[in-house]
Length: 151
Image (cartoon, rainbow, N blue to C red; front, side, top):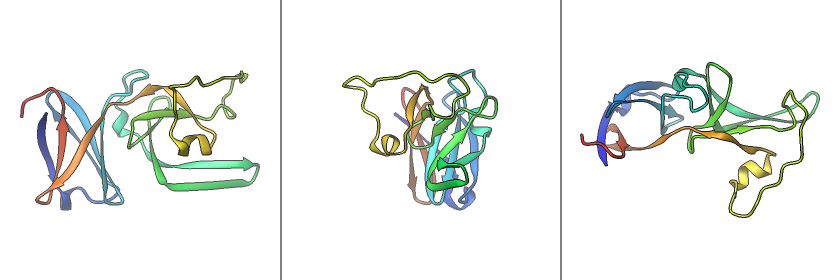
């Protein structure tokens, strides 16, 4: 596993991002309220520069005029088609009740466990998962680990 320092912590302030090339991969590194995340800068849906999209909090509604903003759970929205990916896991999500086509009953078979948070909020995993990378802070530097490469 190759390790790459990408910035000093004071150069990647909360709310900012930096897109870097590591081992031939374009990777977006995000500072969200002091927590660091890294995702491949390629949307698995159709190849857009995923890490150029907005970082959003999760919105939930139980009816007209009722909106709850969950700012602690961050999603990265693809700038091309709006697919949303969890910054921590890379998993895409959609809300089956807000799609623009007729919904059909879907069952989840054993072995397809979804995080408790997503079940609690009525979300189902989408078909795409963005590639994520391990990020650490060492001696005031943000370090990204890229598997299968040499530094």
